[in-house]
Length: 287
Image (cartoon, rainbow, N blue to C red; front, top):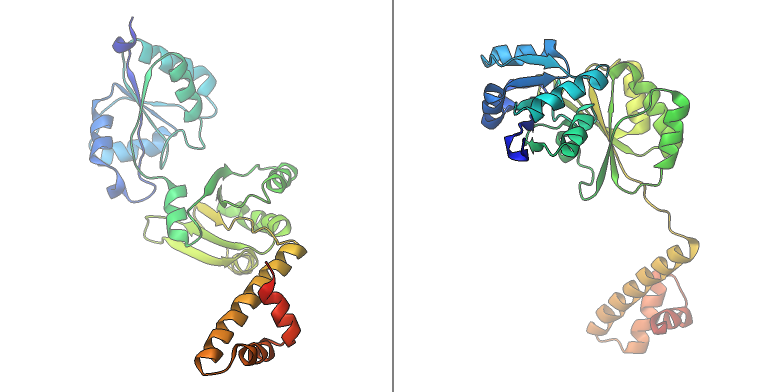
């Protein structure tokens, strides 16, 4: 069989809460494929019933991927088309769909991603933290030792960091973050696109206090401020000197516009910034 006779694996995003967020294209794909492979068929069947989609459904998840994956690849090789979906959001992103995509590529099966909802991106763009550079880290390790080791490795990452976390683990995770990252800015997005959608902004310490007083609910996305490098003493001194030089130049210009001579303006500027005339002169001629 030639590659053109093989089926297509569609990566089909589903709503992360509000069912209206599904795209027309996604609905058409779900109706037209031969099979839908879902993380949890009990969740996906509700979506299919809502939109009156009758396509056959099968499960594909972390616990059966080793046995189910080859079967799905065989179907794709036989010319069947399959839509891969997760419970909510974009499949193959922090879930076992990644393995199926890799296997399909090895078999030269066409993989088609559909645009759609992704909780990490939604949380990031509404967080108010930098979106210029970011890293999606998914779920942190469950074991405390492994979690601490992982966070220690990325503690100096200057990018905005994005994590997923469950409500029953959130306080413990925040305390670990505080211990390793310090009291950085953080935004927690919960129940996104749903009625009780909420963005909780503050420092890690402030959010810990809030959650200890009132237990949070709903799946959460944590958006954490990236590491800010501390300037070395020499860098700090240079920055201070540059700032002082700019202030002196500005004051001298202003004083000379009032009719003072350059020497008089220098004396007045030095007095205003709190240095001697000689020190001011040395700063101004420094190259």
